[in-house]
Image (cartoon, rainbow, N blue to C red; front, side):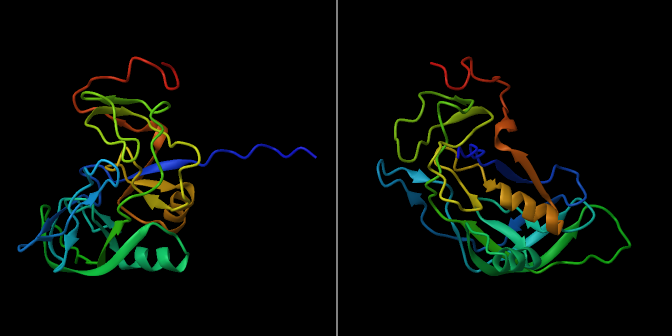
Length: 231
C-alpha cells in the first residue's frame, strides 16, 4: 500500500496588530532596566538577538487605541502576554516560551479620551528559547542582504535590507510552537497549531502572516533578482 505524501508544515510570523488598531499600545520599561547577556553563537561567537530583560519587570503603557490586548511588544526580544493567554498556552501544552514572570503595570496613559473604564489585564513577561534549531532555508527564501550573505552555517546571521518571504530548511524544525529561527532571529515564527490556538481563543493584538508572504522592505529595494532555489 502506497502512503500519500505528508504536507509540509506551515509557519507564520507573529507581530502585533497594525498601528492605530483597536489595541494599539506602546510599552515603556521603567528605570532601572536590568539587562542580561545576549546568547552567543557556539560556532562564530557573535551575539544572537537582543539583551534579555531582567527583573524588576515594571512598565508604563501608552494606549493609542481603545483597549489593551493579549499581546504587547516591549523593546527587545521579550514579550508581554496576558494571564489568560499564558494559562491557555500552558494548559494546552504548547511549547517554545519560557519565563512567565508577572509584570507590574504602573500606569496606563491614554491618547484618546474615553468615558469607558479601562480593564487592565494581568501580564506576564515571556521569551522564546535563546537558540532554536529551526533554520532559514537560504536557497529557498527571498532575502536581500546588505552585504555578503551569511558565512556562519550555525547562526546564519547577516545584515538584511529586505525580506520577501522565507521558508525553513526541511528537517531543522524541532516541533516548538513559537521560536526565532537561525538566520532570522528577529522574526517571531509560530506553528500552524499556534495559529489555530490563537483563532480558537480569540486572542487579540496578534497579526499572523504566512512566512512565505512576509514583506519587509523599508528601503524599497525589491525582491532578490534570482528566484528561490536558483543560482
